[in-house]
Length: 347
Image (cartoon, rainbow, N blue to C red; front, side, top):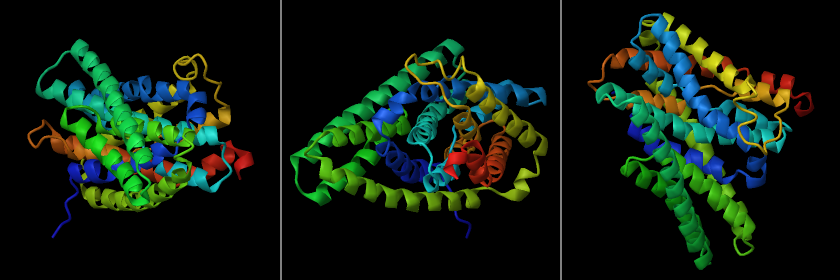
């Protein structure tokens, strides 16, 4: 019997735990210092990536609307291999925060863009309506995550029972995701914001200080288990024979994904100066951020979630899976080399 990898399994079981674990560990002071590049990559960067991929694929004959769906599927990054490499090396905390926070936020914005792209094909919503829905979804999802974190922090402060306090963080991670998703918002963005806000609140509260390390230890274990399982799921979901049906589209799409990433990382006007208080990003950092743009579980789940009657569904999935596989192999296996070359002091 063939194991079925469903979008519900990936998005509802694995993704909330992974993004919450990473978000909780982010230090607000480190995040604030690189907030400009993070917002640039997670906002304009996601839209630009989808647009570049769409234009490139339309040149080889794919309808622009369907090409944009592929672009939105592959817009979210999954820098697991790069982050794992940086954790073994002496990498500046700000760089690791930049890579992790950007990935977390663009996972959420990427899925919002994907949902709108699918609606554009199936329901024909206009560009103006799509922009409004995108902004509203992002903002309200952040509000839901913030509200959930505030409630959770008060619940933790109200009890001295360690088991209950740890359980509250699990409920927060999965509860905010499910609540936001149930009302048509971005579950990932809600969970990311909840993790950052709760972690910040607990580190600033003297009464919660003993719990900070315990929560981090718990979620490190959870994240390790979930990450291992996600890579297994990718192996189950991708059929190598199926990828041979669209080699040109996969090659063009992958090239466009990498080119769009380079554009958004190396173009100072679009990335570095988005936030007036952001510090200039060192060139070595920029190389690592660029190479961390590999695709993974989020793109996989988005492709699998396409409606059964969606036009050219199989082709879209094949191209998306191919881009995911190529970036994982090409960038994931060379992450250590790039980090060491870009940051000699990290070796």
